[in-house]
Length: 137
Image (cartoon, rainbow, N blue to C red):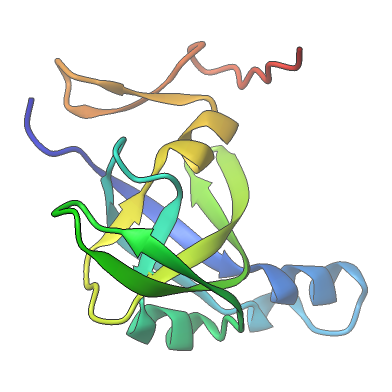
C-alpha cells in the first residue's frame, strides 16, 4: 500500500473557545489548511515548529518520544488544536517535532472522527459510511 494523504484544516482550540465566549470574532480564529500524511503508526497529530507558531499554539508539556528509526527525541506538546476533515472534527494536543515539515495525522484523531484508511482507494473513508459513530463501552 502506498502513502495516503488527506486535506485537513487545523484550528487553534483556544481561539475556538474565545469565539464561543464572545471574546473574538470567528474570522480571527487562527487556522491552516494543509495536506497531512495519514500515519497509522503515529499516535496523534504531529506538526513542525513553524506550523505551531503559525497557529499560535502554546507549548504545555514536553515528552521524550521514540521516532520511527528507534531514536529518542524531546517533543513539545501543545494546547488543543481542532482537526477538521470534511464533516468531521477532532480536538487533540499536537506533538511538535522541531524540523518536521510533513504533518502526520495519527490514530487517535482518526478513531475520534470514525475514519479508516481504504487501501484500495488509498484514501480516508468513514468507518461507518457517512455517519459518524462513537463507541463507548
